[in-house]
Each structure stands twice: as structure tokens, then as C-alpha cells.
Image 1 (cartoon, helix red, strand yellow):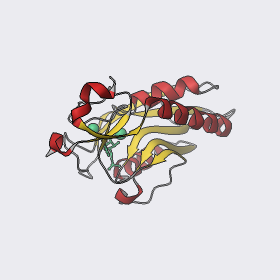
Image 2: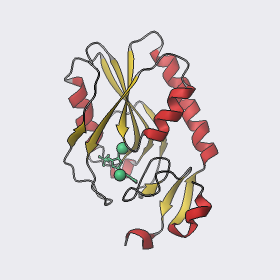
Image 3: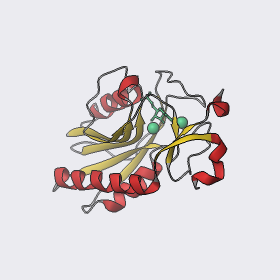
Image 4: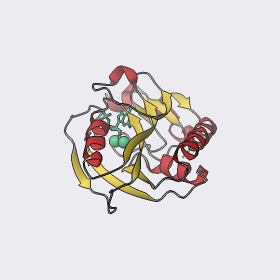
Length: 183
Ligand code: 5GP
Ligand code: MG
Ligand code: MG
């Protein structure tokens, strides 16, 4: 979906579809360089990471199997609960694997911090994180993220997988929501 179809709901466009494509391709080049010859598994976090996973994996030159997890951290609102629950677990045995978690956005960092510890306890060789967006001002825990697309201000964003109450995920750009939508 293009921004013009929901223009009254958006206050500004942070990144266009072209900017996102360029950034994802840069991330893919770095990942290919770092993971050459290793036994990698991409782990996507449903549902927000679906677009970045789909775009990133096709830009990667090596073989990268993928798997998915679903965890709950937010309800339909805009605030982190800090409580993480596994809704769907991986199908893959992680012993000896170099896991790369693929995420849409890091806000408080609580979800990823928990997820990394959880995956590390399964016998992985390494667990690193690739996130398209990060909000440094919102982070409540220090977490080492090897691949970050952009650092953004502490604002709620939608599009390219990111939802508000399951809406706007299929927007092709990343935008901030107009206050009337969530107030
Ligand atoms: P965290 O645990 O880092 O606070 O956030 C976990 C999840 O909350 C993210 O993976 C994402 O699904 C959701 N989230 C955080 N910030 C935003 C945002 O600005 N917009 C949307 N749509 N979801 C967000
Ligand atoms: Mg997410
Ligand atoms: Mg959400």
C-alpha cells in the first residue's frame, strides 16, 4: 500500500520504499561478508519482521535458512509491557548454529534482550541481531545490536511490517502516525 491511500492518518514519512531497499541491501552486504562459510540461521520475529526478512534474504548471496518465532510484548497499543511470552517457537535445533535474529524495530530492547538470552541457552555458537530501526532514547536495557538500519527518535512508527492494531503493516514506507489515530 502506498502512503497516498492513508495520507490523513500519517504525520510524516521517515523512510521511502527506495531508501528502505537501499538500506536493506547495505545490511545484506555486511552480513554476507561477516557470515561467509558459517552455519547460519536467520530467525525472524513475527509479524513485524516479515517484510525485512523477505527483502533481506533475497539480497543475501550465501545460503541462509530461516525460521520464525512469535513472541508477545505489546498488545494492540503502543507501550511495551516488558513481559515476553513465546506464542510460536522455532522448529530448528540451534546447537552449533550462528543465529542472526531479524527484527523490525528495537524500542525498549526488552523483547530482544530476553530473546537473545533464550536462544543462547539452546547451544548456539553465536547470537547476533539485525534490526531495521532502533530508538536509542527508548532503550531500557543495554543490548548489543550488530546490524542497525537507522536510529530514529522515540516516536511510534508504522509501515513496512510495523502495525498499529494490525493496521498499516502493508504500507510500503515507514511513517509516523498522526495523533488522531491513536488518541
Ligand atoms: P521492545 O521490546 O524493544 O520495546 O519492542 C518490541 C516490539 O514492539 C517491536 O519488535 C515491535 O513489534 C513493537 N514496537 C516497538 N516500537 C514500535 C513502533 O514504533 N511501532 C510499531 N508499530 N511497533 C513497535
Ligand atoms: Mg518486532
Ligand atoms: Mg505490533
